[in-house]
Image 1 (tube, one colour):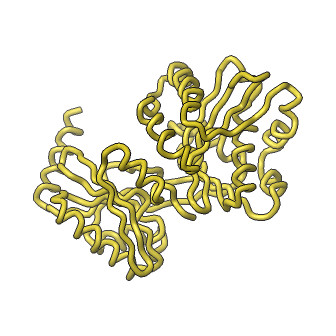
Image 2 (cartoon, one colour):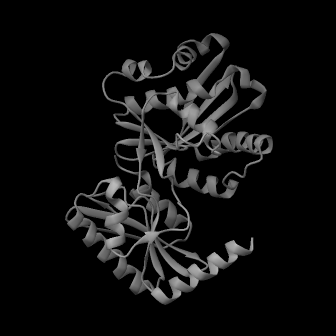
Image 3 (tube, one colour):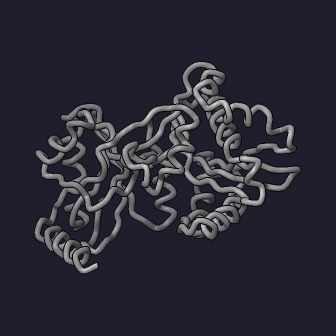
Length: 311
C-alpha cells in the first residue's frame, strides 16, 4: 500500500500552506517530512513514514531524518513507520534500540480498516453486510443518485453537512479554511475526489477521498440528518469503492478504528460502520519520537508531565 500522507500530492498541499517539506529517498527507503512547531520548538514530522523495505534501509532513512533535524535545528523527529523491515509486534524493541520512544499520543490512527479490491467488484460486495449491498443496488428506486466531482468549489457541500454533524454530535471538524485548501490543492490535481449523494437533484450526503498510486483513503464524510432514514452514506461509500476499483486502485483505507476490546471507545460507532463493508484490520507501531536535542526534549517531557499532573 502507498500511504497518501507520503505522496507528492500531499507534499504539494503542505507547501501550499506555507510549510517546509523535505522529500528524500535512497536504496529501499523514502520519506516525506514536514517541519512543524510544538511547545518543544521545531519538529520534523514524517506521517506514516519513513517507508523502508528492510531494517538496513530504515536505518539509512533515520540517519537522513536526523541530518535534516540537525540542519533545521529541530528538537526531535516524530515518525510513524508503517513499512520498515520489521514486524509491528517487534516495533517496540527495534525502535527503542535506535533511541526512539513513544510519543505522548498518536498523531495518526494506530489501527485502520482496509477493504481490498482484488477480483471482481461482486466479490467486494459479497464481503459486506447484506443491508449495505441491498442499499447500493436499490436506493435508486427512492430517487437517490450519486456523482463525483473534482471542482474545489463543491467542497461547500461537504462543509455544510460537517457543520450539521458537528452541531448534532458535539465534535469539532477540521476548519473550513483547511478543507477548502485541501480541495484547491488536491481536487484539480486528481488526488482528491468529492462523492455526492443527491435526492432529486439536491445533495443529501458527501464524502471526500484521497488517492495514492494504489489506495483510496476515505477522509471526511457527513450527511443531511433530515434524510437520515435513507442511509445514503452507505451506498455513497460503496460507490466510492466501486469508482476506486474502476480506476485500478487495489485498496480502500477507511482510516482509524477502535480496538476490539474497547466498546466504549469514542470511535466505536464509526468502527461498526466501517467493518460492515468487509475488510481487514491493520495495526501500525504508532507515533514515535527520536530526540535530537536531548536536553530540550527532556525539558519538553518534564513540562508536559507537569501540565498533565496539574489538570
